[in-house]
Image (tube, rainbow, N blue to C red; front, side):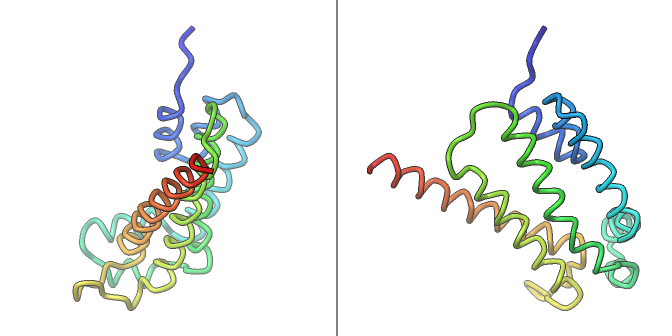
Length: 154
């Protein structure tokens, strides 16, 4: 029987937190993450926010958003991805840093998503947190590579 690899588990977790945990055989953790995903999704009205954002209705998305619930989402999402990746096999020291910075900056993006306008464009509660998460991941990769290189030199 073929054993799935770390990247496959990471990609399934991007699709839905908990799917990668199922592939890793961590069923309780998988079900817990999926339940948490559905609760936060429902309470923040995330699906409608995504639909409005994709259609370019940013003001409607902002008005629809329950920010108190949505602020949980980046951490839940990035943790699910990281956990599936980590449990998928050997993981380098400091490999968690891009995930943590992605979660942190994604949350900051949610906080400012109703007012911050990079390049003069209001991106709203979907696009701004995604942009910030990608920036956090990129910074985290640079920090990870620096620490990995520094550690190998010592």
